[in-house]
Amino acid sequence: MKARVYVSFKPTVLDPQGQTIRGALNGLGHASVADVRQGKFFDIQLKAGAAREEALREVQQIARDVLANPVIEDYHVEFLD
Amino acid sequence: MKARVYVSFKPTVLDPQGQTIRGALNGLGHASVADVRQGKFFDIQLKAGAAREEALREVQQIARDVLANPVIEDYHVEFLD
Image 1 (cartoon, chains in turn green, blue):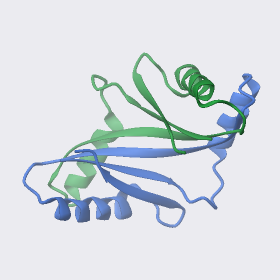
Image 2 (cartoon, each protein chain N blue to C red):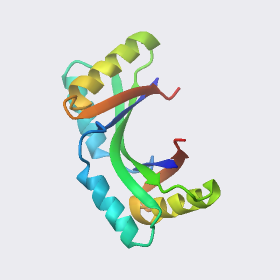
Image 3 (tube, each protein chain N blue to C red):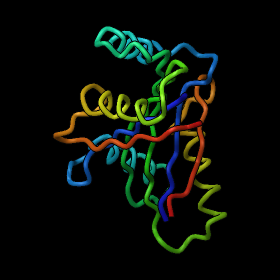
């Protein structure tokens, strides 16, 4: 079973890296780019055997406790298979 | 129009950051985690007006030239709206 965890800044949090990329793209002639925000994702391969519900609970716990900083980041879990 | 560009290492490229996360998760008791690979995504807000086809071409060019390193990374473009 393979899960993907998306982690991105909350919409209210400034994303200076995204702003830098937007500035660079505008400077390179991509004038239609209005905004860029960056995020991370983690593809987690789980050993076979666990039920999907149990796996979802575990991956959500991993996302909350390890992969994301819940103060400034949102996360979202998805199964790829 | 909003596009999302996913960038991740090619499957054949070693991902030391992902391996470190896997090691940490196993150490924290998440024994069911067999592998972790990390990637980035970029949410690109485009100014209204462009046709979808033209926008896709532009975002693919941005992904290839700026956001990803085609030697070691794969990218994938998706529209969110």
